[in-house]
Image (cartoon, rainbow, N blue to C red):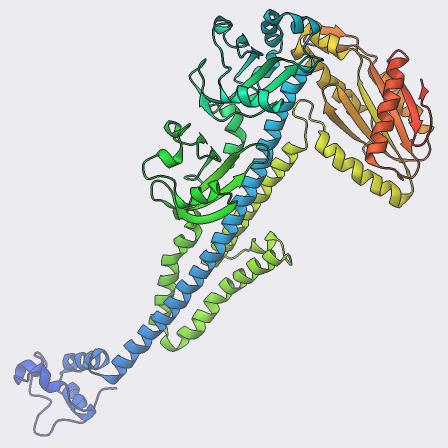
Length: 598
């Protein structure tokens, strides 16, 4: 409402409305700072609306006013408080995230180490089988070793090169280069001396191959005659620059900028993103070994925060292998690892500033409300760590910063579970046939025995192999032999029940676990079904082959036996079939003195 009280002695019709009051009467602006409400009404009545508005604005924003000072002070306090609380909470979450990421990386490396251990042990087993299968004529004629090695072309998949030395260290066979045979001697090499000394196969330290010029390690296997005299040493080379060996575990590298590496316990690099560093010792490089690497060389297993050779702050993880003196490591730069946290720092600060500007007094309540989801996220981490919750609690529908952070934890945890599941499946599956392998069979048989004892039902184990499988390999080659194994596995799976378990132990040896049996008489039906399933010719690589099998079946009435006893009984029954002419089956029971051959 306009003020009605006029200024004494001044007429409303003085005609000054076209000019400001200050301009008309030469009133300085500073003189108006202390005017009262009646003065403002008088000014407005005289047409000085501009001066009235400016005075109200000046009064509100006057830095010397108590209202302005309190508003600014409370706003700054709320801003500092909300900003400090938000940043502190995010720092705590980041600290918890470090532990989650570090533990995840260590779990992944542990799984990767188990995979590499299994791979190295498998390569050792291949060389051992190669040595055990050495024909008698090669014992007496070393010059035939070259042809024997070249006949095992399937080993090219496992080894970069396959070589053989005689007892003096002379090279007598090389799968990749016949031209060097007989021209080189490796008796002074550490791996040759060590193999002769310990009288068993070893994994060499990394070195640059004299034959190929590539960085490699050798897996060796000695061959002795019946008198225990060393005849030959065969060795398989692993190319440290080949993606075949490191390809699968390389897929586990953390993030986009992270990487995996491998070194020996003396600091020699086996694998690194920078190929120029392979075969070099970290202690001899510029700057020496980093503190984290020194800790790993002293036996440390786990994760820590530290700097890389290039000075990048990162989460660095180490894990020692069981089968060799190798150490695998992972580097995850913190700049990428903490991206979900750092991305929301600016947003949290802006939100805190908005709360302070909109309502200083209500800011405290707003901060508590905003930080409640972060506290809940911290409680989720604690509950998961203690085993009272699973990662599903992180999968929330929130669309704010805390929802992003929670889903980031969920995504990281899912990635870990998927990677562990893949590695677990790989460790329990036979690569050639897709059946369960020996490890999975051991677990399945132990579990089946427990179920049989609890339910009081019968349990049987079938142990079978392919008759004259060696002749198939020798006649048609290992490629056809592998196709026979694959087709054999398919037929086995086709003739068993859904509740039964089939696995490949090694070579042409297979086993089947039959559960929920009523009595021993059912085994004759199962054995006959397996033998009949193999009657039809196997068509492998365009060749029709007659393939037969011998099956030994062992029965336990209530599962009251051990896995070893059941396997032994089934194996004994299998050999009864072989002695009786093969292509049949034999049934025995635990505790039975003899097997019935059919």
